[in-house]
Image 1 (cartoon, rainbow, N blue to C red):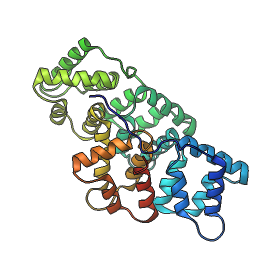
Image 2 (tube, rainbow, N blue to C red):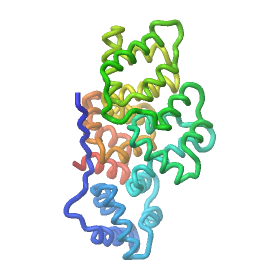
Image 3 (cartoon, rainbow, N blue to C red):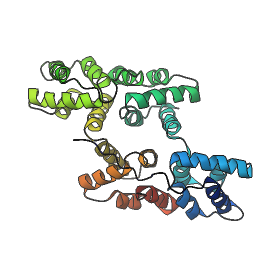
Image 4 (tube, rainbow, N blue to C red):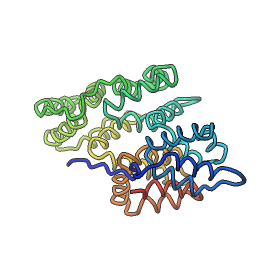
Length: 319
């Protein structure tokens, strides 16, 4: 099945960066702030267009748009808007950095960002991360993770995955047999074999490997991973499998978990809605409704309020 990514935010046309920057300045000038104008403009422009607005704003008013927004807005609403104003790769780098900063490590965020990317996307993130923080991503990650999970992420970050679209049916059969021999066919698990195959093969190739695995063992690769692994490695392997089969289903599940039970994981909710809006948020929205039998918009409306809710729903219902 071919994956069809449907964005909810696309470049607006006609586009006038100067007019947008004037409207934003008027929305923040004087007493009070017109949040509605800020939402109307920034949730309906592409990231590239927002960067143009930022440049025009600075040229016109000799002020930094992001600084002005920060001084006028607050809370989760501010997080959404500043996220929208940040170039995507830089935004993901910030979240990776935050996941490893201070005490403890947020493995779920590392897994979500690193295990869902193609090799080409990974190269861009690695380069941007070192430019921004002056330390290689792999090095920092190694100091924050351990064991087979660290090994898997290190392989992914160092960019060993074959280029997108690379497939070899014969090799898929061999890889399926290797996975079977490393897991279900023996006592214990040879995680190195799983790591190597899952980190080296392109997503298209992994799709073939999983089909061959089912033919060979009569079980799905998910069932094998469930039996053979636990903790962070299990979660990372499952993320890879889900992203190979349907990235939208993976992100729909992440969104559901972020809003399930007591409290809301706002950071995850905002990151996914903001970072996927120009990629496949429309597809994620459809998958969420298919899997959970309720709209993503209704779930978000229940869990959030005020301008925060309005901004997320505007991004969700853009296209």
